[in-house]
Length: 221
Image (cartoon, rainbow, N blue to C red; front, side, top):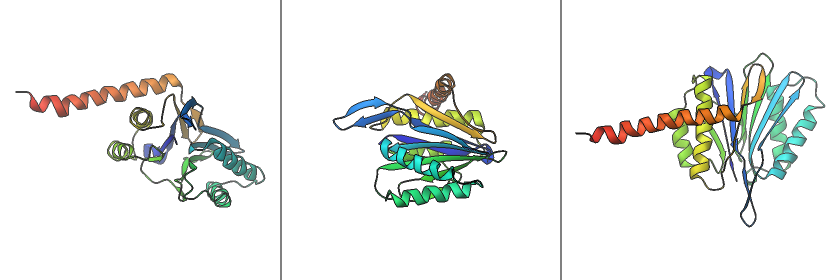
């Protein structure tokens, strides 16, 4: 099933989308493959990430991008409507075969995040979205307590990396490496692995500090 995580940050000026790379085929054979795709349609930037069947994702992504290639006046609203039309045409609602996060950037405008949670297609609000097997109690708890809409970019990178890292440690069928896309008014870029590693280390140091504060300090005499 795998996991993808996404959220708006810095007061809606930026977006982070993160995913693991592990797939598990029939017979429980594990392999790694990137679960994202970026594209540029004129002044419109796109960043897809998914959890679920990679074949179904490729079909959806190709159909969506193929339709957008035929349109000149592109917008976030049109991208959302196109995704919804393709999802409906392939009967993907409640199928359990695909979940998607799609970042959309109209140049010089703050990016938007479109969610397909397996049930419907909608624009993201100010919260963390985890789709796939990452939609677990663990991820919901961490997202609810660590996220804030005005979280600065560097902290948001740490949160995105940390959430997927925890999924790879505690949620079945998730596994490293971790990929993260960052979007702002200039478009979408892939975060370098070294920066992801440093962000995780930063969060784990904070985790250790919190453990000391909550568990060790209260019981010291």
